[in-house]
Image 1 (cartoon, each protein chain N blue to C red):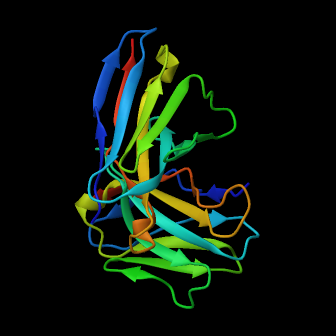
Image 2: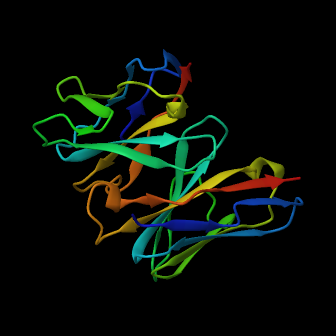
Image 3: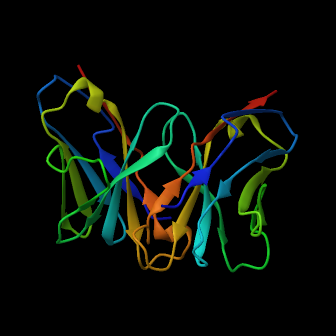
Length: 119
Length: 118
């Protein structure tokens, strides 16, 4: 099946620094990628939808200046958490939509997630 | 906005027995898909099974089956012959396929933590 990678898998940073998380579709082209946030033992909350070559669409309540999303190519989307604070600590998961993939699983493949800890 | 409800925060089952995880939804859109994902402690999301709103038969994938009751707006996951490796968090999710602001997005339920006892 299609593979989505995320880098880094785990990051610890100091409060006030910015952290960039990469999401790559390794063997398919993804015109759309999604970014989710998940707190421990909680559900996945969609943060934004990232479309290649255009601005991301953010969900209500998500600060777009805080969570910068760039989908510069058909295989790469990045999420930058700017001026991170302890409350930004969370598990961030991306998923990529393979339009050529066989539905329904092929509609959205998930990355392994990135655990962010802000001290 | 669509809402997915999983009313069981945690479930326990004995190894080799069957277990049902509940999921209800509230969309009025006629065209949608229902998904179940497994999330082990490692965090990866593993796709298990899918049911389309127009599918006439309940979906099955190996030990997983989906009890789809459209009139009741429920899509319960049944895991037969539970294994220790089935212990994980399970999410029900829905995607709307026609128009609206939620088009194309997956909306997840709260999740159910399943623990399989030996």
